[in-house]
Structures are given as C-alpha cells and as structure tokens.
Image 1 (tube, helix red, strand yellow):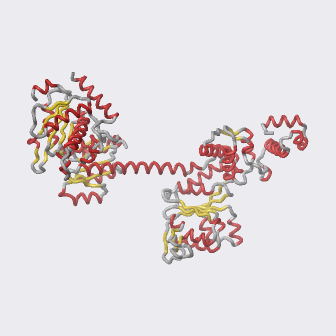
Image 2 (image 1 turned 90 degrees about the horizontal axis):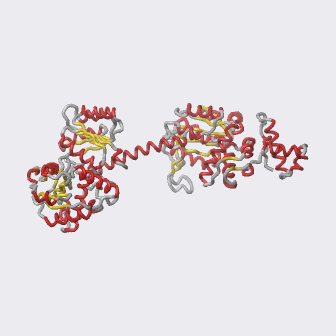
Image 3 (image 1 turned 135 degrees about the vertical axis):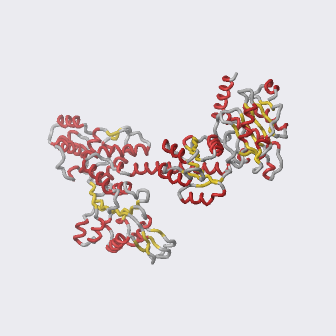
Length: 447
Length: 192
C-alpha cells in the first residue's frame, strides 16, 4: 500500500490547522492539498477527485455540512471526515447521518489520527480490490466463457445478452453435455443478481424426499438424522438465482410444491410451520421433450408455462462443426496448463478425427476426450491415436458431410479394423494396394 | 550562534532547548555519528522555549521552536537539531514527539514522552537514550525530505506512542539511507 497513491484534501479556514495537518500527512507520504473555504474546495474538486477529505464543520460562507452535501454529488466515492471542536459534536453527528465517515475533535490525538487514516486507506484499498475482483468474476463467468464462432453460438450469446438483465424465468433446452449449466451461469453473471449466489439443484439425481429437503431445508428433528435446522437451496438463493437442472425429472408432488413456491416465493422448511420468504430468479434446464411430457400428463402444464417464459435452445455440437476445433484448442490449453504438459496443438489427422466425430455427448464428451488425450499423449502435439473417439460417423445424420470426408472416415475405419494391414484393408475396400497407399498419403492417415 | 559552533563545523548542531541532561546530548552526538556517519556537536548556547509556551495547554508549540531554530542557523548545510525536555504540540495535534522542516535544516525532538517514568515505569537512561537517537534520526530524515517508511526496522516508520519507537531501530533502511545520503551530498555541494 503506497501512500502516494492516496490523495487528501484538507478544508479548514484556520491556516494553522491546514498547515499542521498538511505537514502531518505529507510526512506520512500522502499527496496533500488544502483549501481555505467551501468555494476553494469546490474549485479543487473540479480539478480532480480525492480519496479522503478532512472537512472543518464551521467555516465562514459555505458551512461544512453544506459543502459535504455538494461533495456527495461531485466526488461521490470520497471518504469524508469531519473536523470539529468539542462544542459542535451535535453538528458532527448530523454530518455522520449525512454520510460522513467519521469525525475528529480538535486538537487531534496523533495516535488516533494515524490509525483512523490507516483504517480508511485500507478500507478504500479493499473496496477497490473488491470492484476489481467483481469485474474479473464477471469476465470469468460471463458470456465470454461461451466459446464458439458458429452462427448458432453467436445467436445464443445474443439471446443471453437480451434475457440476462431482466428477471425473466428462463428454460434452457438442449441435449446432454451441451453446456446448459454454463448458459445458466452466463445469464446469472449478466444479471443484476450476479453478486448473489447461483444455486444449482440437480432434480434428476435425488429421491423425492431428499429433493424436498434440499429445496426447502428442514427444521431440527424433522426426520431421523435432522439434528440441526438446515437452510434449503431456495433459501440460500435469496437475492440470487436458482438453477433447476433436469427439471423434467421431478415427481408430481415436487412439481406441485414448486408451482406454489414460484407463485408466492414463500415455502415451509420440512417439519416447519413458519413460512420462509426468498427472492430468487428461476432458470431451469432439461433435455427431455417437455411438451410431450405435458401431453402425456407426466409434467404439469401450469408448471410448464411458469418455467418456460423465455426458452433458449442450445445447439448440439454436431450442428456447429466449425466450433469443434476452437473448443478442442481451448480445452487443450486448459488441461495442458493444469497438468503442466507442454502441448501446443493437434496433429492434422487428430484435427480431422475431431471434425469427423459426431460428438453424441456434445461439449462434455469433447472436453473429456481432450483431457484424456493430454494424459495419455506425448507433447507437443495430440495425435489421433490419443483421442478416445470410436463412435462411427454414420451413427448420426450425414447430410452435411462431403464425399471426401465420408471416404476418409471409411478408409480410417477399415484400416483400424484391419489393424493397419494395407493389403487386407485394400481387399476390403475393393481397391488395389497402391491406390490405398496413395490415399493414406493424401489424407495423412495413420496405419 | 556562538563563533565556536561555526569554527567546530560538523554536520549536525545539537541545541539544548531547556534540556537539563547535557550528558544525554553528548551521547546523542556520538550515537548520531555512529548511525548516520555525520559529525554532530552540542551547541555552546541554549534556547529557552518560553516564547512557545501555550499556557492553556501547558505545552510548547513545536512549530514556533522550529522557526526560532531556523532563524539562528548561520551555516547553511548544517542541520540544527533542538532537544528539549518540555512537552511539544503541533497546533492541531494533542502532542508530538518532535517536528522537522521537510527539506529544511531545522528539527526539534522532545524527551518528555520518551521517558519510561511518564508511563509509570522505572527511569531507564538506556531506553531514553535509544528513543532519543531513533527520534532524532527520524526528524533529521524529514529534513532530507524523507516521508514515513514501511520497511520493518527503519527509523522513518511513523510512531505515535513510545513503545512503537522501541519496535524500530535508529538506522535507515537501504532506500531511505540512499535518499538521505544523496540529499545531504547535494546540499553540501550547493553550499560548500
């Protein structure tokens, strides 16, 4: 903490006070300026902002209180300390009510002054650090964390930007592994609730009674083992966001309970009889066809409409081929750094394999594949053999594959099946050995 | 100033300002020389601080004493350090251990709040002597333009109570020492 970074303005009509305090702070290394009255102080404030302002409460012309009110509109984040005589403590109290941080009486105990200023400087440093950390947090969890250049992802980012600042209930649809929770976190990070928690609840992984206790909390003695009162996730999300993952999997009873909570934002802890209020935004996610579930009666229609106010569909990875390599490179950098392995990129055949794969497990599968490759591979490049990709391309739709891509994938598969034996592979493919060698060379295929 | 002071030369002139213990001052000059590598001598004259007394507070205005010491200085590069037994105050502060002119030649230090007996302890000449040396180096540091330092042990750490003085040493840290030496050299050069 360098004192030179902190500026102090002393406003007092007595020259001896200005000189004496000014000298004291100069010796401490602070940047000090003085003003003899309210007008001079406002002139100074028009030039620059100050961190700390010491303000005499009794001055000719503009009073200290009046000046303090003006400072609040000019130098809003300045910390104001009132200087007063014993006789005017009442006025000092009034100044404190008006937003002054503290007051000191003349003559000032140097020990008190020293500790007061150290405390104020430390507080300002913490506030500045807090602001910086919050900005970094937003940068880390915000829309920037959703990678991809495909039109589908750009559209998704636009939708998040639209819905995030509002308090709208959001339903995120998408296949397993597409990053629905990441989307939910991005929406939360872009909302005014971002400095309060986002509480995820996996509705599909818990039994009905456990989910009820997790959601609403419980009172002491509510059931065997409930030795203490415990807050539920809905209560913990007060002021923030609650994220219901796999909402399509909750039982009929929980659906009814949730409907009531969504309508009133009020609930009872398990075993409790006092209503608990909580202010939370709801984001839910599912990979189920909820419309079909509503039609079949397994999901309440009224709850469906409550949750599905703004719907976001996350495209599967196979529909955004152009993002695969970008994401793979991102995960490679991430895991190479965390495992301290010096991988710089992918071998051409590995890139081709990444592009060819259908990624039924979506981004999660891709991330797992790259993590594994970093573990088993040999730096500096990831080879195709390091990638745990075995699902055949033709399992998914092939309507967007080029003829060459189909040819490469087929030759690769046949070669794998024949364990690299070119003669057998050529026989299977119905081409001669030289042609196969040429294709292996052309497409840079492993044998 | 007596002619003897000018003739003796030296870098620091220690002036008794109602200070009864001349042996303490003699020891201070030796300690200052050992600590700062600057010669110090006790002035052959004294300054009475009565002109700076404020009856209502029963204390003495350190800024007024500084101004008087400054007036009496005749040898420009020399630092003039007043040492007094009386309790000092700066107008807006309840007390000060000492005061100095930033980038100026004059400084004053009081032994009043450095004495263990003020805090109900037994008199201890060693503690008093050490505290006086530390505070003298501190105020002389201000005359070289040094501000308060945060390096553990450095004499330029700010102190607002006596025990705090005991936590630091009489020496300047490397950075403060460099600045102090450079400023002193410049002033010697400008006033040969």
